[in-house]
Image 1 (tube, rainbow, N blue to C red):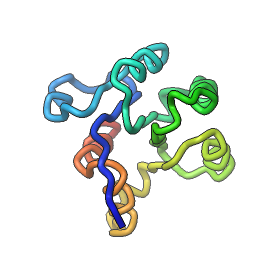
Image 2 (cartoon, rainbow, N blue to C red):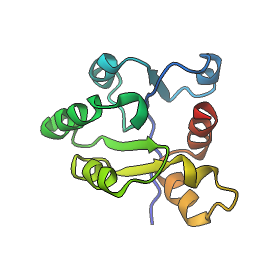
Image 3 (cartoon, helix red, strand yellow):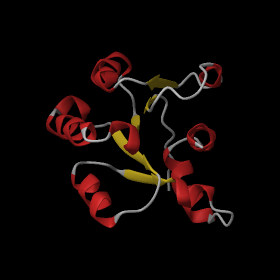
Image 4 (cartoon, rainbow, N blue to C red):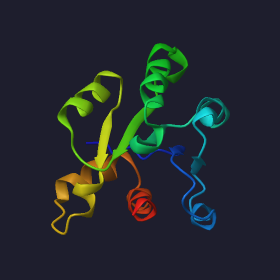
Length: 137
């Protein structure tokens, strides 16, 4: 199995942390405005986009539909960070084009399974996943 680590990551989340945390990650661009998503995508052409589900709210569906219909975004992988599992919402997000769902409950549990961490490690650099967890707590 070939592991792919993405070189450009777009993080769409609220502005709840200082910009010094982003200084260590040159491959991550943070967007804290819902209307700034598509200009940022066009600007950096990311390999993966991580959406904060609670931050995006109802705008997430519209954003995902727009990404899905435009061929410019075909190679972009989409991840969604959620607080907990909800089968109806999760299946709807999968239909809309979300490739990976990341749950805070699973990542912050004291008994982390290696398979879960290996899955996300193969998609995103592990330090970025840990960073997202620390920021949202």
